[in-house]
View 1 (cartoon, rainbow, N blue to C red):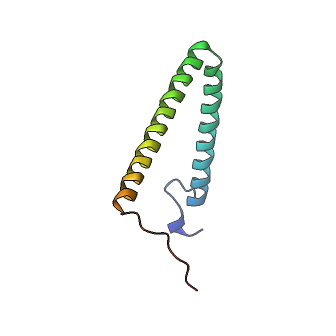
View 2 (view 1 turned 135 degrees about the vertical axis):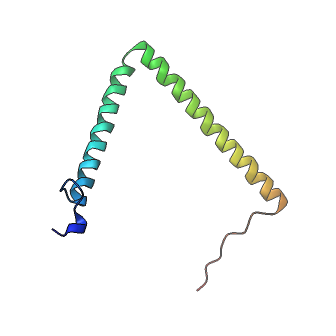
View 3 (view 1 turned 90 degrees about the vertical axis):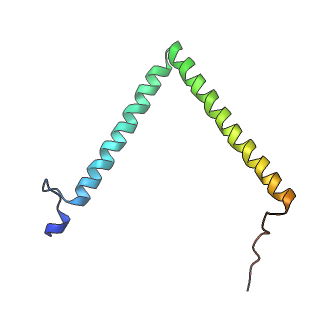
Amino acid sequence: MRAERMSRGGIGLREHFVKSILWFAVGVAAGFVAAHQFNQTNQGREFFSSIDAKARAFGQAIAEGYHERDAELRADGHVPSAPTATR
């Protein structure tokens, strides 16, 4: 294998990348298992319910702000027209 494709530990860059992805996937899976176990408790359900409520409120605020700004731009005539197809 060519020297520029080798990392310091003697492992090729591709192998290092694959190992990194594997460890990332293992961490995600472990996080899901831990969250599932925590959600089985009353405290866990309350925690995840509060997180869900905050995330929904945040998403709603983003959507409302977007729609308000869109209405302002349309009222001022600043919204560009849809591009036309040329043949």
